[in-house]
Structures are given as C-alpha cells and as structure tokens.
Amino acid sequence: MKTAQQTVYLERALLVGMAESRVDPHGPDPLEELTRLVETAGAVVVDRILQRRDRPDPRTYIGSGKVAEISQRVLDGKIDCV
Image (cartoon, rainbow, N blue to C red; front, top):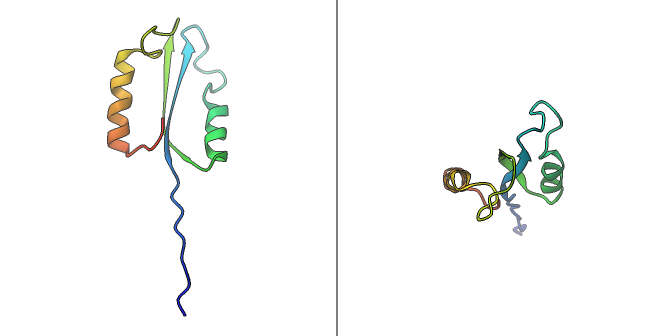
C-alpha cells in the first residue's frame, strides 16, 4: 500500500520598508516586526530592502530606483511575495 506524501512549499518573501533619513541606522531594526509576522504566516524571508528617505515618493513610495532594484531581486531570487 502506498502512502500519500505531502510537500509543503514555503513562499519566498522580499521585505521592503522605508525609514526616515534621520533615524539612527544602528538603532532598532525597522523591519523586525514585519519579519516575525511573515515568518509566523509561514513564509521565509529571503531578502530585505530598507529605503531611507525624508518623505515617501508620491508615485512609488520608495522611489523609482528602488522599484527597479526590487524588480530585479524578485526575478533573480525567485521571490513569491513582496
């Protein structure tokens, strides 16, 4: 008799956040809570991007350069969710 075997696929996540430029880069990790939430939801964090800006870009929030970088990382890293 054959037994059924299940395969669990963990989604691969790229986390993106924005922090104000004046925030201490050696202070608390701004993406720490998001990392824990993603892992609790059952995904694996494979990459993280933190954009430092004084204010959000009105069109893309993080800036068009970071959008292009994220797009490339998604392709290169076979990312499932951002």
